[in-house]
Image (cartoon, rainbow, N blue to C red; front, side):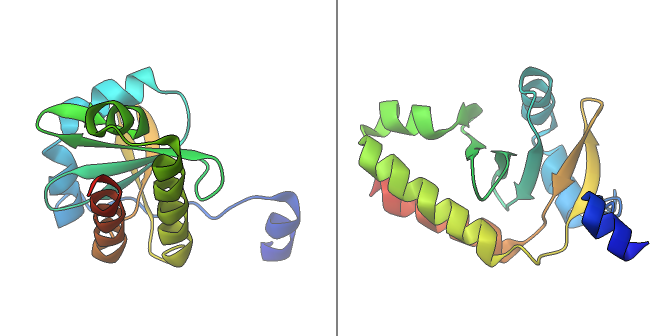
Length: 142
């Protein structure tokens, strides 16, 4: 079966996220934001819970993707960074490349399934990936 799954593109289903674990608690802290966001956006979502936020890779990382996170009660993304911080398109592209590289570097990290607003999302509870995302953002705005 494994060979046929590979040939026909079927992926193994990730195990469910432990609802009593730290990653689930971090996600629950942002449940309102995440649920509203998941209802509004209709592309695949991959959550990377961090101590102070939840990063959300949108669509198909590390290729064509976006990134959203929540700070001070609001949604932050490439567009809001550009507007709020006055970042040039070049700095946004550099940030995007770094975020794609971080995703590739941690491609082997365990991933889990969770449900947000009635839809399945992927969760990557990786402190290392969250740290690289944070660092890339901080470098972009400094």
